[in-house]
Length: 209
Picture (cartoon, rainbow, N blue to C red):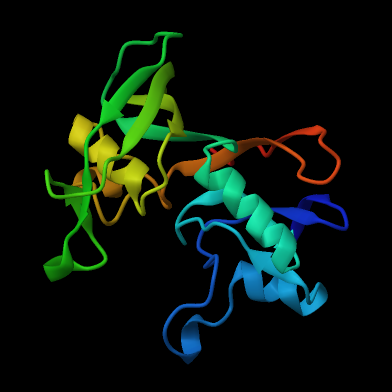
C-alpha cells in the first residue's frame, strides 16, 4: 500500500487503478483497498470512495468518532478534491474555472450506468483545461473539482460536455475508450483542516499519465 499520510486519527492512501475501494458483491470482489488497510489497521473506516477504475487519494478515518467528523466535513463541502483527467477532443486552455451544473440520475435499467436527467440529484463540477496532449487523436488535460459527490459524476459530466474521458469503458464510445489502457482519471489533491489538530492538510499524489 502507498500511504501518503498517517496519524492516530486518519489515513490517506494512494489507490491504484483497477483496485476496488470497498468490497463488492461476490467472493471474487472482496480484495479492496479498505480491506487491505483494515488488515493492518483494525480501526480504519471508510469515509468516501473512488471508482475501481480511478486512481488517487482516498481518505480513511481511525475509529467511528473520526469517521463522523470527516463525514461531516464532506457533507459541509470542507474537503477540497482536485482530479486530473485526459479527455477526448480539444478544449480551450484557460486558467479560469468553468462550471457544469447538470443533475445526475441512476439509470436503473442499465446499472451501474448513470446519466444526466432532470429527475436526478443536483450535481456540479468545476473544470478547466490546462494543456493539450500529444497522441494519435486530439485530447485535453483537465483539472476537475467535484462540488457535489455523486457516483460517476465526473465521468457523466465529461460525457455530457461532449468530451468523454479516455479509457472510459462505461461512458466513452469505443474509439475513445480504446485510446488508453485504463481510465485516465486520477484524484490528485486532497485538502482539509485536520479535525483534531486544526492544521491544514494539503496532500497530493502525481498521476501516472
